[in-house]
Length: 414
Image (tube, rainbow, N blue to C red; front, side, top):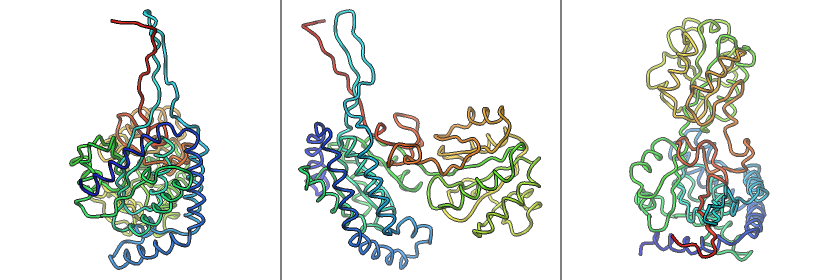
């Protein structure tokens, strides 16, 4: 057996223990949260190595921000684990039930997936988020992070493994693939004898690679080419404030916007106000010809590629559109199906936008930055699913479970 197959077999054995762990899972989660805080200095030292390596490798500041851990962020990781512990356990919930004419009683019950594999990139907080959610959902997890965060991930995963063992759980409820080569990623994608589902969490390249190469069922998570449409009836101050938040509060995350669409009837009034706020963060604008006529040559001419790109940086594409229908058509063409928002005071336009835009989260007069498991009250999340089967949008506990039918009889035969 390969090292990864051994890891898979151990995780499979651990998943059997987790099926009946019940409320003891919360003890394990609280032990993890406590250990993360107690070993914060150790995690930060490991993270500093990753940051230094990232700088030497030429990572952008936005990518370094995704990678960086601070005492505050580690405390946030611990709080996220505690929030998951406080959530109701979905395992064993009866989703539906009925009694047939022949007397058979049928119940559809929520059950663990078994072993979940997660491939992710340069965000070490995913290590604790993913482990906590999978454990609460009754599944073992095999984590495979990118090379950029390997030292941070090793530190966090070992602390968590020791923490669950301290309360009587198998260490192998949580496992981390230490090899960050492309070969290990491909092997994990094909570990069908042990993995029940595989979830990629990262950029477009990672997700495409997993979808194309996996032999394990995959839940796609969110590349975020997100949009805000400023309708002709919009409150300009509200639009500027929401756009500023959605682009600049944390541009390196998938629920940050990458394009704004502005109705032609409000463009001359709205665009200067929007730009005034964005200028305070030195956001680079790439706009259509009409946008450049209104805002001047400081706006870079937008290309087709700009409207399709997830910048994850202080860069924003801008386009003036003729109508609501044009905005909806643009989003249909370029969106990745993550999050879109309309700023409007027109009730009918709001309803048409929410009905016609086919994304996981569609907002009216609010920032796309709310597309997050914690903000939605789900606790920590695995990611934002942009597909339509089984799970869509922020993936919390329920989305990490499966179901089975339990049938009770008293001698019935067919």
